[in-house]
Image (cartoon, rainbow, N blue to C red; front, side):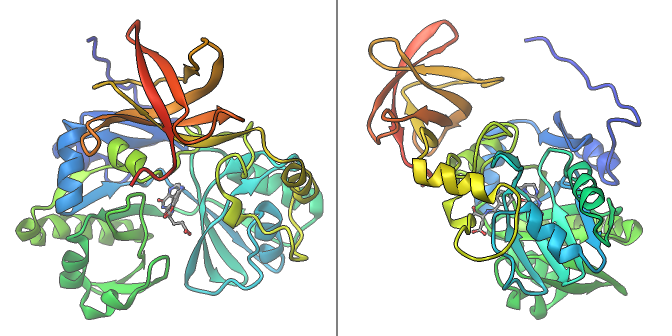
Length: 369
Ligand code: THG
């Protein structure tokens, strides 16, 4: 296989952690919000096993914050999401689909309510800031919108709890899932949430003070030796097994939240105002015609770039595979696919071509585990 390197530039931004992860052996990058996002440190399968047992530190600075402050900030944030935030609380995170006027997905961020007049939208890979600015201008909202210099460091894996307690004290063990608060590291306060893009548990440190954040990064590796700490990154295998969706891969602006299984984050009955509400009501009452499902394929390997057609026994296209990997847990390939009605039923058989060979598979529910 040919290997390539990535040409860095001002347009493709490095993160404060880049020089560190390069010393630590990053072997592949992806890009995320015009920033470098590590994609591998050697074998993804080895890293998957390590993540499920130990603790890793991830450079996920590419998960940029869109900060919205001002008198109309709550109104603007609500306008962008179909999730009802009227009962939201300070110090809590909310997973919120952002949708356009047609009901198409723009992004699937974590929204942090710092106060009723100050919000961070922790975005997936699309330019939410431009959408927010357009809406604010068009509505003459009294808001300020900017991308603050916040660089998230995630600490993930079952041993992250003991490690973080060692650094920040017992206080941090009281943090609930999707809660956040400020914790002291050598005199600097850091916003830390119990969250992260794996189902192995852990924290995300929203580093605002870069110098202190880098000191903390090094300190974690020093003090974490007893927990077999390693550098890592969002892990393709772990996130597919856990069905954590990836915007741009599993869904994009051509998909609506019902097709993506976000039903519990779509609140059409309250009186809050958001974009696309009428269209979502219509989509809901007419019923969707395709949806994201899992597939399991009797193959030992797959490499998805773009998407791969899924066919039925008559060679009719019934859907497309959007992400996939070999799963050590199942001993076969698993993937996330958009499947047409009525073929989305569990146990529907599918055929797929991988490396010019045809393999059999079955539709299944998400998440896999
Ligand atoms: N953390 C932060 N920002 C992010 C991500 C993150 N921005 C980009 C991307 N990831 C956004 N996508 C997701 C997808 C899933 C989750 C978080 C961000 C997630 N889901 C939980 C689940 O599915 O179990 C909880 C959802 C809930 O029930 O509220 O955590 O990872 N800062």
